[in-house]
Length: 112
Image 1 (cartoon, rainbow, N blue to C red):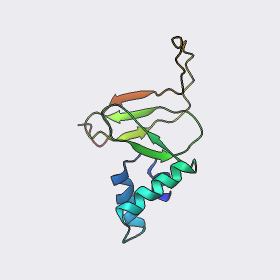
Image 2 (image 1 turned 135 degrees about the vertical axis):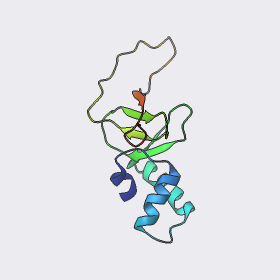
Image 3 (image 1 turned 45 degrees about the horizontal axis):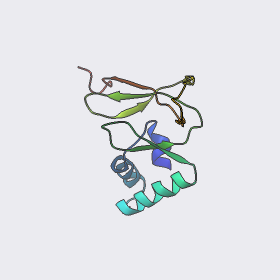
Image 4 (image 1 turned 180 degrees about the vertical axis):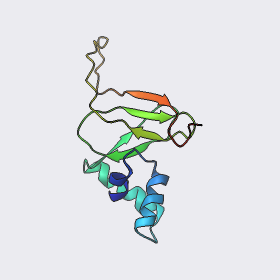
């Protein structure tokens, strides 16, 4: 959980493994995947899915927020502030279970 909380952005399992390995040497990849699953089952972490992107995980923050995807490095970043819910009239028989707000561009590390 320390690796997720300290990142400030959603991380892929390999990014979590890399960050956690620096905190705890000798860590195995399977241990990281097992811990991610447990964190999600306990409501401490949530998965972040975007089309064309690998699944990422972030600490459960409790409020809806937007994300920024860098078009160059493909990293996903949290954007500060709450995003208001947008009322949607779903078609008959459909139920809306959530919404996502995404912004695209270049992160500071990729901007030339």
